[in-house]
Length: 408
Ligand SMILES: [Cu+2]
Image (cartoon, rainbow, N blue to C red; front, side, top):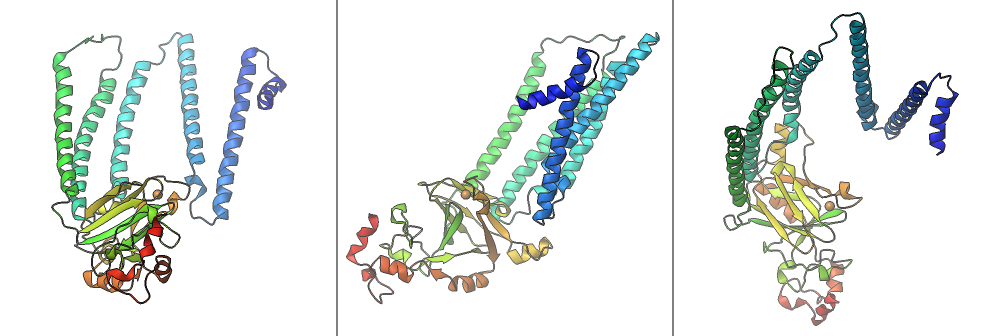
């Protein structure tokens, strides 16, 4: 209410002669308020940027673009008013006013040219930013699919935009021409229904076969099994030990010392290793076993064209073969600090942004070196908790009979 009073007050205080003038003052005071608010917002953002010593300039903020948009609208409105005024003056002088059909037609032609250039600029400037070079075998197939779809939609886009705005310009309203009324045409209906249906069917079938090939686990035997578990807000990575097999896990077994709920009744789990970084040997088939402990997360590795949801209670997996080592990619991208990254691609809570992990693709020899240095999950604390017998590094009898207590 106070805000409304302020606005009306501003209008009342002004020396207006009639109601229309009062309304204008009201609009003007609203606009002033908006500009003030926008300026404050801009200044606040610019000071926040300087405080955090970020390199992002103030003009990169959303407020700036909103202001720019309103300014552009204002510009268009002013030009419109001037034209209208000119039109009226011409008519008052008995001359022919502005031909608005021509104005609209030319506007459509300008929009076609400017829009086409905008689309071209966007494709050439930003197209290369959309996805980095694929670093996995199946990634190349996904990229091919992406390119085919983009080219097809681009052809349709160019044809339809030229027809739409070209017709609006060439056949703009004229006193000498009468529009042809076309209520219905079966041939046109058939053409624009059947052609897109065929093209879309080809694309969907193409996609279906590619996806089946990627997902078909029976064809590829996983050379390396890695468990990846998402929880708010981190990823846990588990590598198999010398036996090459991972032990079973169960959420019921999760404790402070056993955060993955590894089942230590399962001998395969004795040598399972924990790792901070995901290190992958190049040209080997990797099977990521994906788990979640609380909410839905998503394993997303854009360079490998890999994304799979991590769903609590529903373990999933994804198989892929990395083809380019991190060192090779550093040369290719001319960036000595380049790293492959794993992100969480589900907004899973306020610390979601923090769910990032470095993925390093290395040669087989480098991988063997690295894996030899990783520590097992079976620490002394876990052994104590599970009442492992003293000095029993291998063999099934090292677990005491009290281990069922874990299930409580
Ligand atoms: Cu997450």
